[in-house]
Image (cartoon, rainbow, N blue to C red; front, side, top):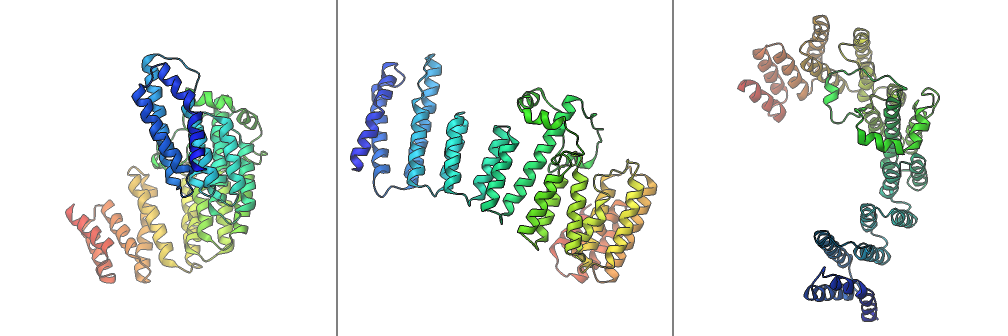
Length: 444
């Protein structure tokens, strides 16, 4: 039976091989070698004990053969409408997914190859089959949503995939996180489109630290190629012309709904809530960013009001996205100081809260050497206060001593920095982080 199947499939490839020989794309000897190789593969994959690796090797062989075929017809100037190689590879992939339907990686390889060959109908068909067979696989739903958004420029289709997927995978953190990311990415594209259409004035360019952060989602200058791509996406035009304050996607209502539902499905996981905070924080140029951050922090504080991480995010919230050159910087700085004072009275982990505050503001001073002297003095005074207070209360972690020494080095006080590290080592003997910092300071 296996031999008959192998012979049947080999006979179907004979017109292709005759075409190759007729047009002198391959020599007779090469065609004989191709036939021998295919015979071997066909016998392997039609045998009862075949493995997925047999299909993988067969596909790779045919891909290499097709690449060689394309190079030769290009060099020889041969024009042909026949695409035997692509069809054959599709056929092998199809047989592989039928034989091993449970292997998601093979389905994805099949889809990726079809995308590469711009076979949109094949992509749609295979993706649909994969989702029907594996509705509980979050990766497939996420892949389908990204394909709809990135390749088909269809946010409605992308949302549909995410919503259907969440019916089966409602406990998947990846699904909820990627759904929120999808919405935020769409909103970011809409704001780019509004800029192109002249609806929004170009944002003021600020040379700051955040612009160098590779993790930050920014609205870039639009290139000609990007503009052409965006012109094809009519959904962007439709949404871009709507009122930002009333459209649920643009004003953050959809993202908030996703967050709220995710918290209901996966309750009691503060780190998961913080993942959303970090995700939203990447989209600083989107108008609803601050609204989303406030909502997330409020949820965290309502859920765990004494948690140091939640309290720090609340303290820092007013400073988020604010630069020292901004008019609101002084008032926001004062609010942060007051927030820290209040947070220390309720937190259940002063160590983490002290560290978060000192780490942030020490870094801020280091990143802004030309900071207004008034601001520098206020921040330095607050840092000195909390560094000393943390140590006095025995709430200083090893890293806090390192940041304290860094703060002293910023002020040119090398000897004091060494003393601080040594005090840290007396409290944490042999601590590698402290020893490394001490060695670095002494080498300067």
